[in-house]
Figure (spheres, rainbow, N blue to C red):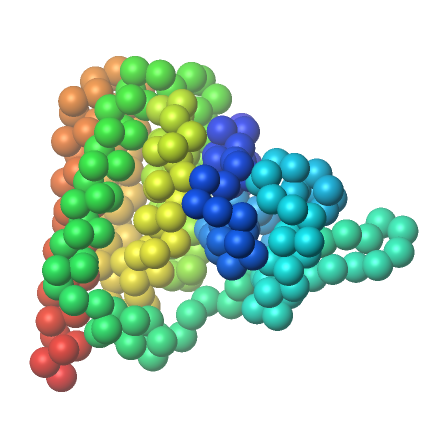
Length: 249
């Protein structure tokens, strides 16, 4: 498995039964996150409506309403006739103006709370991945580091970075950690890779990903956790600095 593939564990988390209600907006958010983060590739066919509704444990009518919302947002295309169905469509990268507006509207307190949650999820995921990761997990992570290193566009870097952290949680063999990592990446990932003011410097991110992966391969959970937490903390602190500059502009 390489960096272009999605592990079965990560895909399972994307389609896991919903725990926070069967409302159409919740279903749309879950599927939209998976598409935006590259867990569902551009042009990839979604399961049939009945199969997907069963996987998510929601009513078919609820799923149809969610798919309608995703079509409206340009994240899903539905084709009729033979070979038809619903297909994922990768979103266009957000404009710098929208990202700056989003960051400006967040408070320092909210950003620190995101950091606290991400440190807990990402650090624990790295610790457990060092104990539980298999050969395929490690191969996937190597592919994602290479993918991040070769990526030039902010959107491609964001997706490779997000996928790396999501696959670490998947390698920890925890659906709950994986789901929470997906939600965190969907919430803050675009901001961390904002064009011209990246909170995570590209070369530093590649180097730190390789350090985390090396510790996972060496089965050194405490070191993997420490490096992952440092990596996450550095990104959020730089994001807070940029937020304060925007607020004072």
